[in-house]
Amino acid sequence: MKKFNILVLLCFISLLTNAQLKTGNWAYSAAAPIVLNSNNIAVPVNYSDNNVITIKGMYNATPDAYVSIFSLSQEAEQESEANRLINEKIAAVRAGLKEIDPTITLDIDIISFVPIYDKVLEKKVFGKNTFTETPVGFELKKNIIIEFKKSSDMNKIFSLCTSTGIYDYILTDAVVGDMGKVKEALRDKADERIYKQLERYAKLRDIDIKQYNRFISEGYAVVYPGEKYEKYTAFSCTSYFTQKFNLNNDANKKVTRHYLPVIDKEFDFVVNPIISEPAIQIMYQINLVLSKKPAPPREHKPALAKPQKEVFIITPNGDLRQINL
Image 1 (cartoon, helix red, strand yellow):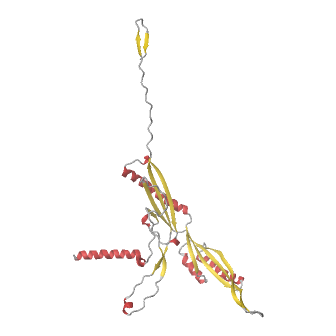
Image 2: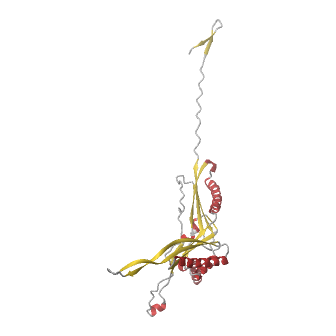
Image 3: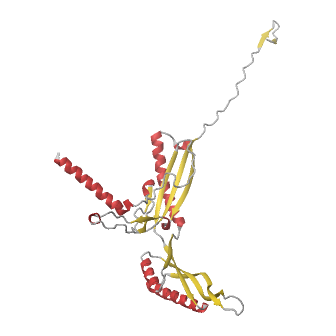
């Protein structure tokens, strides 16, 4: 009995350890993994025949390039001064990017240039004193767009921007250079599965596939990394010391976000299943419908005419005469 209890305890500890490895503190979060249902890709299909083969695949594509956008804002009394100060920051970033990797490019997007007004008291000889809005300076806003190839350069770019006084980080987009090549790889993998399923289907049902018409429908869905970040709140609980000494435990919990990719359990195959960094996930579904060919129409042969009987007699004179019956 003791051995059995020890075995049960070991199994429970093993399950608990596996759960911790798979979830961590995220298990206490309200966010749920992105699991697509069976109709995650809108592909129409006719299920009236019940002879439908569906293959679903996913491709975890490592981005070929990244595009990060940072925002700059500069105020000054003169337009030339605002432009000079903001261009100095951009020049410093451009020079630093060349040291990180000469292939990194930087483009500028001018967002706005507006005057700044303030209320100035005007004293009038006749009448009450009034406040009038007058321009006291200018505000210039620009975005810098940085394109780079390696995700490891992102941390260096952040350090470079903060060291030059640029703190407003907007976003980073991931880019796949040849989406058509990725889709072609998905189609080829799905075609292999379709042919295997057809062969298996014919054996199980003992039918000749050539006697069935084939109709297909297919579709894609693409999910980018920016769409797959979920909110995470740090978990905390009342400690022993808080209860014992009646301490205040109303500290705000830290809220952050984490990458949560599409779970691959809904798919028949996955290309690049191990995700070590945020990936662009391309999903593909193909439906193959088998419909029995109609039987060919029977040929109706015309009925053969019945032969008519003719009766002849030979007269005593030796003549041959036909008798009409």
